[in-house]
Image (cartoon, rainbow, N blue to C red; front, side):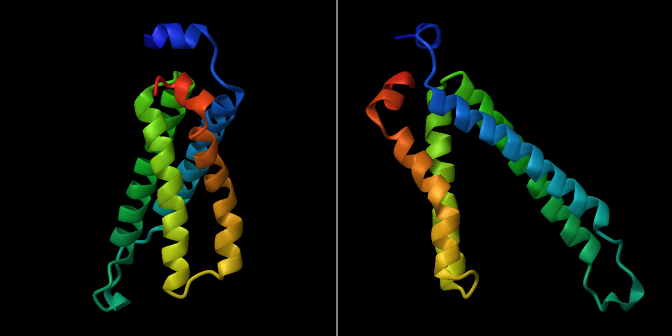
Length: 138
């Protein structure tokens, strides 16, 4: 089945919702990166060798990259591209794994890990349903 035929049959509502959420999340990530970039200060003589401006700017560029990734994800999901299905599943797994790793390293509580992992787990489970897999040609 070609990409055009899958699009003509209609995309699942859940995929449209996930695509919209990815686009909204890209806007939030872009704003966070812009705020970080604009607040990064240039190094001063009393920073004792710590270049906080450069570190902040590098983190901001990483945030811009993640925002672009979410825009690509939204586009791919909306158009039912198979690579977007894999990317969305990967993002969900990485999010949960990152939350667990942060908790193991003394970060958030396990209750916070459970709460912040609910949406990625639901998205991952939804992507694995037969109807959604079929929509992406899997």
